[in-house]
Length: 318
Image (cartoon, rainbow, N blue to C red):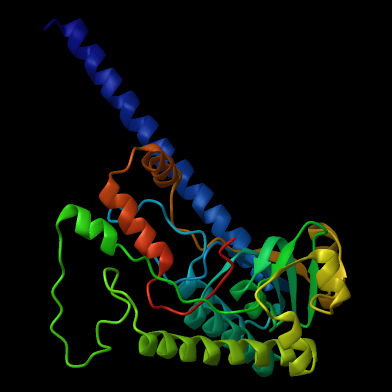
């Protein structure tokens, strides 16, 4: 290697080092700037905009950390609790685009929001986007005011337990599961077993109890007699216009107008929080992963997870 080539390599190495250093400094500066902006925003009076988007469940991504869920349950719960101690916070504005989810998770977020109101005395408003059904509507009962887009689908007040029976498939594949149980109902809900009448009655009792709870929540949230709620709560969905006529929401308006109205109500500015930790690369890889062909086994596993065998759900399955 000649001296000229060596010098060229040294110069190139120094240039790369300087470029990397400047890049790191720039990235650090951007992070510090964003953090400072957040701190300045929090120092001012603001209301929290919380998105309830996607299936309301406590789930995470796949083994690679990809395909992250839209809704982050624990992060949302923790944020609502933290807002109780934030003196600059003047209220919560909930945005919904969800068909619901688990009974447990829906009620857990509802109770967290009710505790926030009880402790702080601050208002909660809700806005319904494309869909705010079942568990989404349940959570919205913590709101003092509910508005919806004119094209919103809402309602679906009810409970469902479902499971996928694959006994026919097992028979074709020559598979047989063996269950050794302590009682005749211990294996109820297994995907390759038929339900007995007794087991159907057991599941129905669970559904009825969760349904009664839903009705009571709506009755309290909307100031409506329980018998009236039961008339509306047969599992059907409602358009925004139908929901307004039946007293299930308070107004039909746009997201921007609802947000502006809450700002006037609280005298504060909106503060947005993203609970997703996914990077741009994560989202890109997740999108690629979703396009890859899936095996029959993968499809069966996803179907079983979607059906949530034996778990009561406040979810709109349409």
